[in-house]
Length: 170
Image (tube, rainbow, N blue to C red; front, side, top):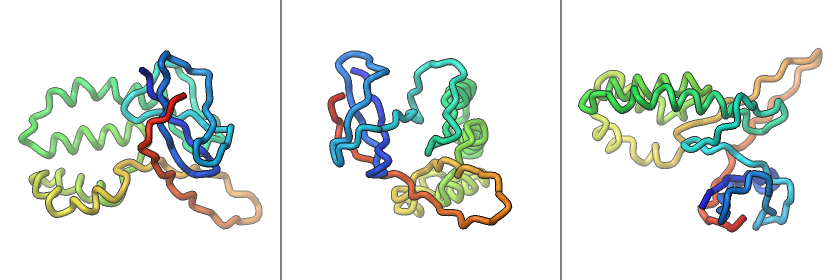
């Protein structure tokens, strides 16, 4: 059964919906607030092939699905051949992934990656930073860059969406 992610703008919530058969056109109603305009999201670990389709400029989450898929494909074989005993190699692949996708790392993940690049033991890093790493999203979507107009505006940082772990029926 395929699982689809949808974002509710009103609740600032990402939810998972399963379908008994593939259904790429149907959009569910938010089970929390009843909103009918949920936005389909791209999973960071499983993407569907849709050519070079890009998110629109008005999207709240400017993730380029084709770019993400290309990055995953190009790094998959490299990740399989790394020396697992050398944390620098894992850090290098992770850094390439972040650069290729346009994602940004959370502050805790940046620190952990820097320590791995220096050759520190990942288990030691996790032991010391476990609470920090568990409390933040490891990947952060970059903020949209807007062209400044003649009058400066105050920038309002949008809060990252929450995740609902319930699996709803589509």
